[in-house]
Image (spheres, rainbow, N blue to C red):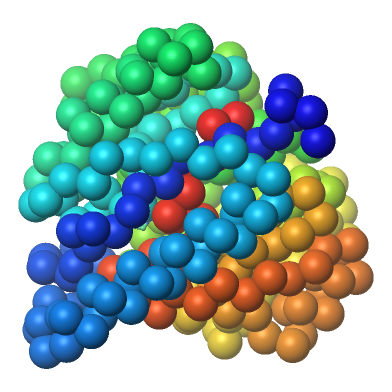
Amino acid sequence: MSSETRPRILMCRPDYFEVSYTINPWMDPNAWQAESGQLAAQSRSQWEGLYRNITGLGVTVDLHTPRPGVPDMVFTANAAVVLDRKALLARFLDPERQAEEVFHQDVLENLVAEGVMDEVSTLPQGMFQEGAGDCLWDGSRDLFWAGYGQRSRREAYAYVASFFDRKVVTLELVDSRYYHVDTCLAVLNSGHIVYYPPAFSGDSIERLRTEVGGDQWLIAAGEEDASRLGVNLVNIGTKVVMAVCSPMLERNLNNAGFEVIRSPLPAFGMSGGAAACLTLRLH
Ligand code: ARG
């Protein structure tokens, strides 16, 4: 792999990761508190496992500086939407995560200073959009799949479309457990889409089916995978790195030409996140 084609991902070590507030149904601060020392240690080793798996696939990983008081900063997928060396910073719905915004701006501006990216921009006032975790790039179709109805607002996507000059297909998320589109949909570089149908409105399922150009491109995940955040995966080349994978989903991924690498992340599951959430692909 030449350095030009080497994928680049932003991650953040979980030095201050914990579950200390509730902004989605996965988060229970009391459950975390009951075993906080152990869970903090587990989160560090699980994160290191993911880091090793990802760097082992030839990815260059840039590291964000961990900060106290913003435990969800580890979920770098939410920092910004990134494409064509441009970043559009997230604006979070919840004040607990709004506190991260200046740090995400910092790290992305540093990447501009290093020549890795060209531009960092912000959304107009009043628009909420939670970064790549809610806006997935599909390079095969030259479009974004974007979630709304939980954290991000549908109105923000007209701006995203004009900022990147790309089509954005919006999908309504109807289950609060699947509050970002990356918890219930993943794009594979073959053009396949892994998704968990019950997380989407009926209209949005129709829109998805119309856009993908044939059901052979859709891989439906079941409750068993979705409810353990297996759909929240990272695809590098022909490998798929995921926290969990049922035998049936693994068979479907194998048939689509992919090999599964399991990277367990249960401590992050307590915050509602897994592999994709912990990575920001610098497309
Ligand atoms: N606790 C975090 C939140 O609720 C988890 C974010 C996971 N990130 C993601 N891209 N789904 O915001």
